[in-house]
Length: 275
Image (cartoon, rainbow, N blue to C red; front, top):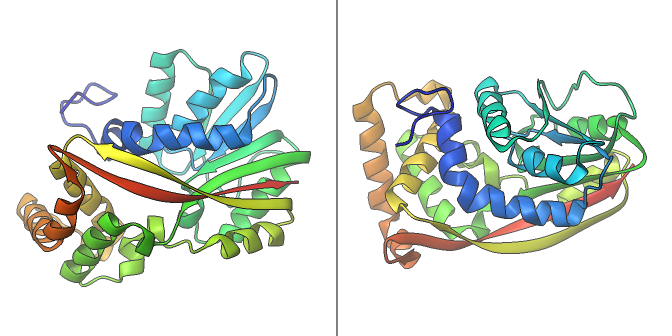
């Protein structure tokens, strides 16, 4: 594995997230998100749940020097990687550690709020959306995306169902990224938070991973990380779980193998609303 952002020989979870999932999933979907958002020079932009900053960094290059981009996330390791990447790309972003449901920023601060695959992780999504509405100037817009439900993602469905079974965990907990629900719920929440002219569209992109084994390992470890009471404390426990999930989902994974690569479609829901 390459060195981490801080020079460590073993990258942590945030570095692995950026290195492996960034190019395959989050960079392509960032382009789609920003096509809908159309950030303009001089605009003030907030990226909620920015993770390693893929959206914020790209947006900074679009709003240019007279604009402003703030990236907010609750995870300090994600922000550490985001800062390192922004510095290496020579883009200017303000990084803030904070909770999307209680943002310590003034009312009417932004022209645009972005949120890529964050809403499903908030314990109170409506509260986060109301915060976004508070932070937007009149006429400002929010653009966000969430995955369609798990049944629309057969590769992840096979992996996460197997993992939940082996962990003795609830599937909805292990599969949090895919449990937000459908377009109706998204539209209802945005309307309930006070947004106008809400529009939800669906878009699917094909994604590819050059190393299927690493994809399985990182997916399993991400699922296990959200079940702290079932923490895998030893390397042996982690290896056993990964092997078991790989074995149980092998038939489905084989359907999506393309030589040494794994390739499949990921359907998404993109919402736009106005304050």
